[in-house]
Length: 253
Image (tube, rainbow, N blue to C red):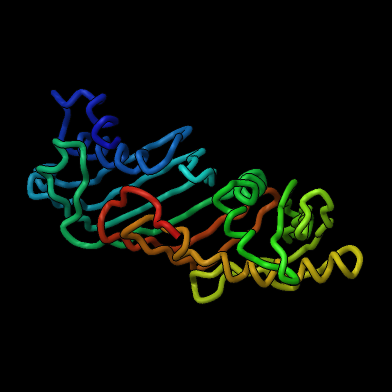
Protein backbone atom coordinates (compact mmCIF):
# COMPACT_ATOMS: atom_id res chain seq x y z
CA UNK A 1 0.00 0.00 0.00
CA UNK A 2 2.89 2.35 0.70
CA UNK A 3 4.20 1.78 -2.80
CA UNK A 4 0.76 2.31 -4.29
CA UNK A 5 0.38 5.64 -2.53
CA UNK A 6 3.84 6.73 -3.47
CA UNK A 7 3.64 5.81 -7.14
CA UNK A 8 0.73 8.22 -7.54
CA UNK A 9 3.18 11.04 -6.87
CA UNK A 10 5.15 12.27 -9.92
CA UNK A 11 8.83 11.70 -9.16
CA UNK A 12 10.34 13.80 -11.93
CA UNK A 13 11.46 17.36 -11.32
CA UNK A 14 11.05 17.12 -7.56
CA UNK A 15 13.65 18.25 -5.07
CA UNK A 16 15.11 15.62 -2.74
CA UNK A 17 13.51 16.99 0.41
CA UNK A 18 10.08 17.13 -1.19
CA UNK A 19 10.50 13.61 -2.52
CA UNK A 20 11.41 12.26 0.92
CA UNK A 21 8.60 14.25 2.54
CA UNK A 22 6.01 12.68 0.25
CA UNK A 23 7.41 9.19 0.68
CA UNK A 24 7.50 9.47 4.47
CA UNK A 25 4.01 10.97 4.57
CA UNK A 26 2.69 8.17 2.36
CA UNK A 27 4.41 5.53 4.50
CA UNK A 28 2.73 6.81 7.66
CA UNK A 29 -0.64 7.39 5.99
CA UNK A 30 -0.60 3.77 4.76
CA UNK A 31 -0.75 2.63 8.38
CA UNK A 32 -4.27 4.05 8.59
CA UNK A 33 -7.47 3.07 6.80
CA UNK A 34 -8.23 6.70 6.05
CA UNK A 35 -7.03 10.21 6.92
CA UNK A 36 -8.69 13.58 6.52
CA UNK A 37 -5.36 15.36 6.13
CA UNK A 38 -1.71 14.34 6.10
CA UNK A 39 1.28 16.71 6.01
CA UNK A 40 4.95 15.73 6.12
CA UNK A 41 7.98 17.95 5.93
CA UNK A 42 11.65 16.99 5.80
CA UNK A 43 14.35 19.43 6.89
CA UNK A 44 17.85 19.12 5.44
CA UNK A 45 20.47 21.86 5.02
CA UNK A 46 22.13 21.63 2.63
CA UNK A 47 19.69 19.47 0.67
CA UNK A 48 22.64 17.47 -0.72
CA UNK A 49 22.81 15.75 2.70
CA UNK A 50 19.78 13.74 1.61
CA UNK A 51 21.93 11.74 -0.81
CA UNK A 52 23.72 10.32 2.24
CA UNK A 53 20.35 9.79 3.92
CA UNK A 54 20.96 12.43 6.56
CA UNK A 55 17.99 14.56 7.71
CA UNK A 56 18.10 17.46 10.14
CA UNK A 57 14.52 16.75 11.09
CA UNK A 58 11.12 15.46 10.05
CA UNK A 59 7.67 16.77 10.98
CA UNK A 60 4.39 14.92 10.48
CA UNK A 61 0.85 16.15 11.14
CA UNK A 62 -2.18 13.95 10.53
CA UNK A 63 -5.85 14.78 11.16
CA UNK A 64 -8.91 12.55 11.28
CA UNK A 65 -6.87 9.35 11.13
CA UNK A 66 -8.82 6.11 11.34
CA UNK A 67 -6.96 2.88 12.04
CA UNK A 68 -7.85 -0.46 10.50
CA UNK A 69 -9.19 -1.74 13.83
CA UNK A 70 -11.71 1.13 13.95
CA UNK A 71 -9.91 3.37 16.44
CA UNK A 72 -9.81 7.02 15.42
CA UNK A 73 -7.33 9.81 16.24
CA UNK A 74 -8.35 13.43 15.77
CA UNK A 75 -4.79 14.77 15.59
CA UNK A 76 -1.38 13.07 15.58
CA UNK A 77 1.84 15.08 15.42
CA UNK A 78 5.37 13.66 15.23
CA UNK A 79 8.53 15.76 15.41
CA UNK A 80 11.92 14.14 14.85
CA UNK A 81 15.47 15.41 14.72
CA UNK A 82 18.70 13.94 13.32
CA UNK A 83 17.20 11.14 11.24
CA UNK A 84 19.28 8.75 9.13
CA UNK A 85 17.54 6.87 6.31
CA UNK A 86 18.36 4.65 3.37
CA UNK A 87 17.82 7.17 0.59
CA UNK A 88 17.78 4.52 -2.15
CA UNK A 89 14.67 2.92 -0.61
CA UNK A 90 12.72 6.13 -1.27
CA UNK A 91 12.49 5.24 -4.97
CA UNK A 92 10.59 2.06 -4.12
CA UNK A 93 8.10 4.02 -2.01
CA UNK A 94 9.56 2.90 1.31
CA UNK A 95 11.23 4.61 4.24
CA UNK A 96 13.97 2.57 5.90
CA UNK A 97 15.74 3.83 9.01
CA UNK A 98 19.44 3.21 9.43
CA UNK A 99 19.12 3.50 13.18
CA UNK A 100 16.28 3.80 15.74
CA UNK A 101 14.80 7.25 16.29
CA UNK A 102 12.85 9.01 19.00
CA UNK A 103 10.04 11.40 18.10
CA UNK A 104 8.17 13.96 20.15
CA UNK A 105 4.51 12.99 20.03
CA UNK A 106 1.24 14.89 20.46
CA UNK A 107 -2.06 13.04 20.08
CA UNK A 108 -5.62 14.34 20.45
CA UNK A 109 -8.73 12.20 21.00
CA UNK A 110 -12.19 13.79 21.00
CA UNK A 111 -15.23 12.68 22.99
CA UNK A 112 -16.51 11.12 19.79
CA UNK A 113 -13.21 9.26 19.29
CA UNK A 114 -13.41 7.84 22.82
CA UNK A 115 -17.00 6.68 22.34
CA UNK A 116 -16.19 5.19 18.94
CA UNK A 117 -13.19 3.35 20.39
CA UNK A 118 -15.20 1.68 23.15
CA UNK A 119 -17.75 0.47 20.58
CA UNK A 120 -15.32 -1.05 18.08
CA UNK A 121 -15.15 -4.86 17.83
CA UNK A 122 -11.41 -4.50 18.58
CA UNK A 123 -12.04 -3.01 22.04
CA UNK A 124 -15.28 -4.87 22.78
CA UNK A 125 -13.47 -8.17 22.30
CA UNK A 126 -10.91 -7.10 24.89
CA UNK A 127 -13.61 -5.90 27.30
CA UNK A 128 -15.48 -9.18 27.00
CA UNK A 129 -12.45 -11.10 28.23
CA UNK A 130 -13.71 -10.04 31.66
CA UNK A 131 -15.87 -12.62 33.41
CA UNK A 132 -18.26 -11.44 36.10
CA UNK A 133 -19.57 -14.00 38.59
CA UNK A 134 -18.33 -16.65 36.17
CA UNK A 135 -20.45 -15.35 33.32
CA UNK A 136 -19.60 -13.64 30.04
CA UNK A 137 -20.42 -9.97 29.49
CA UNK A 138 -22.19 -8.30 26.58
CA UNK A 139 -21.57 -4.58 26.05
CA UNK A 140 -23.85 -2.21 24.17
CA UNK A 141 -24.58 1.51 23.83
CA UNK A 142 -21.30 2.59 25.46
CA UNK A 143 -20.86 6.35 25.60
CA UNK A 144 -17.99 8.42 26.98
CA UNK A 145 -18.22 12.15 27.68
CA UNK A 146 -16.13 14.81 29.41
CA UNK A 147 -17.79 16.56 32.32
CA UNK A 148 -17.60 20.27 33.16
CA UNK A 149 -14.91 19.58 35.78
CA UNK A 150 -12.78 17.72 33.18
CA UNK A 151 -13.53 14.19 34.38
CA UNK A 152 -14.55 11.31 32.13
CA UNK A 153 -18.02 9.81 32.39
CA UNK A 154 -18.70 6.36 30.98
CA UNK A 155 -22.22 5.02 30.54
CA UNK A 156 -22.84 1.56 29.15
CA UNK A 157 -25.27 -1.34 29.25
CA UNK A 158 -23.84 -4.73 30.15
CA UNK A 159 -25.63 -8.01 29.89
CA UNK A 160 -24.29 -10.52 32.41
CA UNK A 161 -24.73 -13.88 30.76
CA UNK A 162 -27.98 -12.74 29.10
CA UNK A 163 -27.54 -9.87 26.59
CA UNK A 164 -31.31 -9.25 26.63
CA UNK A 165 -31.28 -8.17 30.27
CA UNK A 166 -28.57 -5.47 30.44
CA UNK A 167 -27.52 -3.63 33.57
CA UNK A 168 -26.91 0.11 33.33
CA UNK A 169 -23.38 1.02 34.43
CA UNK A 170 -22.54 4.67 34.97
CA UNK A 171 -19.41 6.11 36.56
CA UNK A 172 -17.27 9.24 36.50
CA UNK A 173 -13.50 9.23 36.96
CA UNK A 174 -10.36 11.25 36.53
CA UNK A 175 -7.69 9.93 34.23
CA UNK A 176 -3.94 9.81 34.79
CA UNK A 177 -0.81 8.15 33.44
CA UNK A 178 1.13 5.50 35.38
CA UNK A 179 4.69 4.49 34.50
CA UNK A 180 4.39 6.59 31.34
CA UNK A 181 2.51 3.82 29.53
CA UNK A 182 -0.64 2.90 31.48
CA UNK A 183 -3.79 5.00 31.31
CA UNK A 184 -5.69 4.73 34.59
CA UNK A 185 -9.16 5.73 35.78
CA UNK A 186 -8.84 7.10 39.33
CA UNK A 187 -11.09 8.81 41.88
CA UNK A 188 -14.01 6.83 40.52
CA UNK A 189 -17.57 7.81 41.50
CA UNK A 190 -20.23 5.21 40.76
CA UNK A 191 -23.90 5.87 40.08
CA UNK A 192 -26.80 3.44 40.40
CA UNK A 193 -27.82 0.54 42.60
CA UNK A 194 -25.54 -2.00 44.30
CA UNK A 195 -25.61 -4.41 41.36
CA UNK A 196 -24.58 -1.64 38.96
CA UNK A 197 -21.83 -0.38 41.28
CA UNK A 198 -20.31 -3.84 41.82
CA UNK A 199 -20.28 -4.50 38.08
CA UNK A 200 -18.77 -1.04 37.48
CA UNK A 201 -15.94 -1.75 39.94
CA UNK A 202 -15.05 -4.98 38.14
CA UNK A 203 -15.11 -3.15 34.83
CA UNK A 204 -12.79 -0.42 36.13
CA UNK A 205 -10.26 -2.98 37.34
CA UNK A 206 -10.36 -4.69 33.96
CA UNK A 207 -10.10 -1.48 31.91
CA UNK A 208 -7.20 -0.19 34.01
CA UNK A 209 -5.30 -3.39 33.19
CA UNK A 210 -6.32 -3.14 29.55
CA UNK A 211 -5.21 0.42 28.78
CA UNK A 212 -1.53 -0.32 28.39
CA UNK A 213 0.04 1.55 25.46
CA UNK A 214 2.27 -1.41 24.65
CA UNK A 215 -0.89 -3.33 23.70
CA UNK A 216 -1.96 -0.69 21.18
CA UNK A 217 1.35 0.38 19.63
CA UNK A 218 2.29 -0.20 16.01
CA UNK A 219 4.94 -2.83 15.38
CA UNK A 220 8.54 -1.73 15.93
CA UNK A 221 7.37 1.23 18.03
CA UNK A 222 7.13 2.07 21.71
CA UNK A 223 4.88 4.83 23.02
CA UNK A 224 5.39 6.72 26.27
CA UNK A 225 3.20 9.50 27.68
CA UNK A 226 4.76 12.21 29.83
CA UNK A 227 1.52 14.05 30.55
CA UNK A 228 -2.07 14.38 29.44
CA UNK A 229 -4.52 17.25 29.42
CA UNK A 230 -8.27 16.88 29.57
CA UNK A 231 -9.99 19.69 27.69
CA UNK A 232 -13.66 20.57 27.34
CA UNK A 233 -14.29 18.01 24.63
CA UNK A 234 -11.00 16.21 24.03
CA UNK A 235 -7.93 14.65 25.64
CA UNK A 236 -4.40 15.54 24.55
CA UNK A 237 -1.47 13.23 25.20
CA UNK A 238 2.13 14.48 25.15
CA UNK A 239 5.02 12.06 25.00
CA UNK A 240 7.49 10.27 22.80
CA UNK A 241 7.50 7.50 20.21
CA UNK A 242 10.57 5.28 19.93
CA UNK A 243 10.71 3.85 16.41
CA UNK A 244 13.07 1.04 15.44
CA UNK A 245 11.75 0.84 11.89
CA UNK A 246 8.79 2.28 10.05
CA UNK A 247 5.91 -0.05 11.04
CA UNK A 248 3.58 -1.84 8.67
CA UNK A 249 0.67 -2.48 11.03
CA UNK A 250 -0.66 -3.09 14.53
CA UNK A 251 0.77 -5.54 17.01
CA UNK A 252 -1.64 -8.43 17.28
CA UNK A 253 -2.61 -8.43 20.92
